[in-house]
Amino acid sequence: MRRVPARASHGPASSSPPITAPRTTPRRRGGLLRLFRLVVLLGVWGGLAFGAALLFFTWDMPRPEEALVATRRPSVTLEATDGRLLSTSGDLYGERVRLADLPAFVPGALMAVEDRRFRSHFGLDPVGLARAALANWRAGRVVQGGSTLTQQLAKNLFLTPERNMRRKVQEALLALWLESRFTKDQLLEIYLNRVYLGAGAYGVDAAARLYFGVPARRLSLWQAAILAGLPKAPSRYNPRAAPDAAMRRGAEVLDAMAAAALITTTRARQEAELMVLPPRPSGDAGWFADWVQDDLAESFPGTGDLVLRTTLDLKMQAVVEARLGALLAGPGAAAHVTQGAVVVLQASDGAVRAMAGGRDYRQSPFNRATLARRQPGSAFKPFVWLAALERGMDPSSTVSDLPLTLAGWSPGNGRWRARGEISLEDALAHSINTSAVRLLLASGGAKAVAAVAERMGLHGRFADNASLALGTAEVTLLDLVAAYAPFANGGLRVTPYGIARAESAERVLAVPLTAPTRVISQEHAAEMRRMLAAVVERGTGRAAAVPGQRVGGKTGTTQDSRDAWFVGMSSRWVIGIWLGNDNATPMDDVSGGSLPARLFRDILEETAR
Image (cartoon, rainbow, N blue to C red; front, side, top):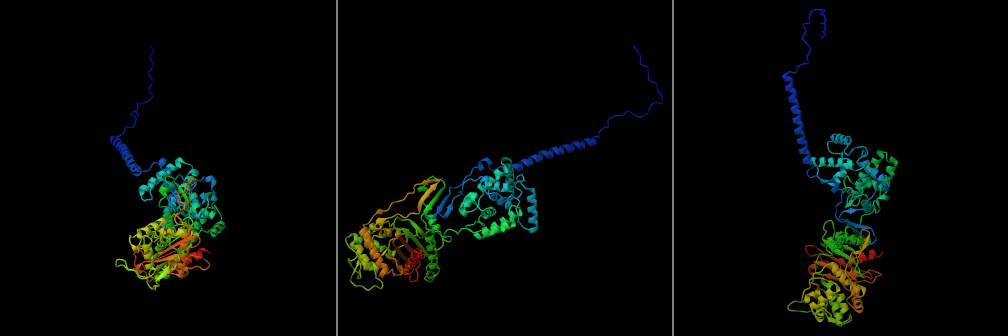
C-alpha cells in the first residue's frame, strides 16, 4: 500500500480557530417569528375585515345582468286632434338608437358637460375626483361632482337615488363591472337609451320627440345641448316646465363644448341664439287628459304603450281656459264666484273639443265638468217641453202661467207678471215655473219626464215629484251638454268621447265608440231648436246672442244663486257652462242669463274667428 508522504511544515502552527457559519441568537430568532406571526395575523384579520366590508356593501347589490333588462310602466301619450303633444304618463321610451346613427355632437355634448375624460378612465376617475374635491374645498360647499358617466349609468340602471357611503361603494363596483363588460361606445349607447331626461322620458329619442317633436337622429346642436344638460336635474331643467332654465342650461353645455374644443366659441354663441322652445300645450287640459284615461284598462287591455289621438282642439281649449279665467278673476270675483266648468261638444257625434273642470288644474284637479253633481235648475226644462211635444203639443200650444199650489207647495215665477194662457214657446223663453209644473203633470208626471231625459242621455238622481220640472235633479255638466245634442243635430243621441284613434306598437287599435242613435223625431228636434232660439232672441238668455249667428240655449239658476248654468248651441257645437262655489255658498245675484250666458257668447265669438 502506497503511503502518501506527509506535507512538510514551513512555519509554526496557526492559533486561529476554524471558520464556521454565524450563529443566530435566540432573541433575534424570536423577533422574526413574532413579526411573521403578526403579518399572518394582520393578513387573516384584514382579509376577514375586507370580506365583511365587501359583504356589507354588496349583500343587497342587484345582479347587473338582470338589471340591464328594462322594466317600466307602460306609457300613454295623448295627442290633440291636430297631432300636437298633449300629455304623457307612465315611462316613455323612444326608439333604441345606435351611436353611429346619431350626430356626433349628441354624445359629444354629453361628455363635454358630464365627463370629458370618459374615453380615458377605467370607470372611476381619480383626476376628476381630486379636481372636484379641490373645487368643493375652495368653495366651502359642494359645487362639483366627480362621478363618471359610467358611475351615473350604474346608478341609473341599478341603484336607488339615496346618498350614502354604501351606495357610493356599490356604484363604484358596478361601474367597474360595466367597464369590464362593455366597450366605451356600448356604454354610451346604453346611457343615451336609458338615461332619465324628465317628464317620464327615458333616453334621448323619447326626450327629443317629447320636447322638440323630432327623432334623436334629427336633433340640432342646440337641441342636443339642452338634452345633455338634463341629467344634472331633469325636473329643474325640464323644457316643458321651465323653458328659460332649460335654455340657460343648454347655453352652459354649448360653452362646455367650446371649452373642450368640440365647437368654436362663435358657433356656441350662434347656437345659443337659435334656441326657441315650442309653446307649452294648453295649461289646464289636465281635466280632459284625466277623463279620457279613466277607462283605458278596460278599453285597451294588455296593449302596453299607447299613443292616443284625442278629440281636443287646442285652440278652442285655450279660448275656454282664457275666457273662464278672465271671468272668474274679474266679474266673477266681484260676485263671489270662485269656480266654473265648461264643456264644448261636437253636436253631430259627441266629440269633446274642449273641457275645463275648474279654475286651475294645478290647484284642484277635481273635474267639476264630469264629477260634480249639481241641480241644473231651469236648464232641465227643455226635457219637460219635449215630453209635452211627444204628448201631441207644439210650440204654439198654450199653457197657463197663473199661480199654482200642490199639496202646500207653490212654485214662484219671480218678477214675471201672469198673463193667463201663453204659448209653450213663450213659456220656455221666459222660463215660467208654474207653466213647467203644469206641462210636467200633463205629460205623465215626474217619472215620464225623467224617462225622456234618460233617453236623451241625461243620467242623474231624479226627484219623483213635480219639483223635477224646476230642475231639482242632480246631474253633471257633461251629461247635460250631451243630452242637449239631439236638439242640435236633428234628434240623435250621442255619447261623449275623447279618443279618436289609438295605436300600440305601430298597430292601429279599434276604438270603442258608440254610434249616434235616433231618440227623437227630426220634427220634434226642429221644434225644440225653435223654442231654444226664442230663449236667446227675446227671453232669459239674451246675453248669449251672437251677431250673425243663429244660436239657442237655456238658462238655469238654483235657489239663492248657488248654481248658474247656460247650455247653448250653434250649428256645430253644444257648449255647457256652470258657475258656482264648491261649498255651495250663494253667489251675488248671478243667474244663468248673466255671467254664464255672456261666457257662452265670448267663447263662441272667439272660436268662430
